[in-house]
Amino acid sequence: RWYIADDQGMVCSRDSLNYATGCCTGGELHSCTSCEAKDKCCSRYEHCVSCCLRPENKPGEKMQSIFRGRNKPETGHWSTPFEYCQAVCRTTARSTQHENAFILDRRFCFSKVGFVPPAPALPKEASLVAGAAGQSCDVACAAKQMTCRAEWFLSINDCNSLRAKFMCCGSCAADQTEYPGYVEGSAPKHQQPAFCAFLPPLAAQLLPSFNCSHANGSVRRLCPC
Image (cartoon, rainbow, N blue to C red; front, top):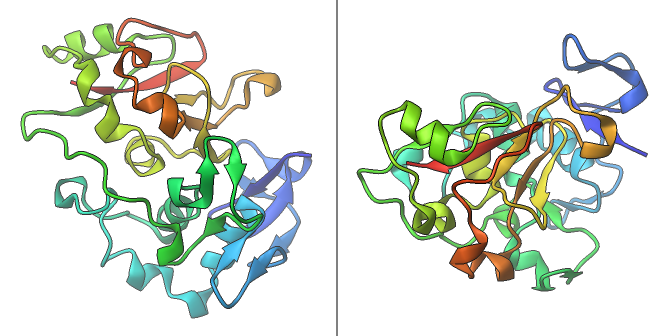
């Protein structure tokens, strides 16, 4: 069953989501159902986002002290508490023993436990470009009079970088694809609409896995230009 956490902190099933507003029409507000207070980690991503948005957790204050990309001032801060909570609640490399084996069931955290290790810094001359649906990074960069650089994908292969350009309402996680990228909200359900994905950590070490020329009709790619 698919669940959604909206920007008010409500958790609901997709059947209760108003797709026009992006808000739940029912559900549970500021739900910490699958979370533990001791480490602020949850077994369900949507509960993590919802719990993080509780006023007593002060997401509005915390988002001003943390950069979108860890140790990357050039990425700036999140613009809303919802964006902040979406970002810190993703699965990280620290929650896995190897690519698909999780150390703990509660792998979504809105505390320091959930912060990813620093990625290689993007060169100062690099720009993050969000491609249009079905557009390759070669084309997206060329439209900005730049060139896609495959060797820079490692620096943007994470949820923080994706959320700098996309909302990722349907969650963000590692996937075996040509990503990093965002699946359009209008895509068929089997394609996981409004979902952000990046290359799994082990595969990401193989630079040939990153492809500037690939395009998918429902995917907006995140491109290092």
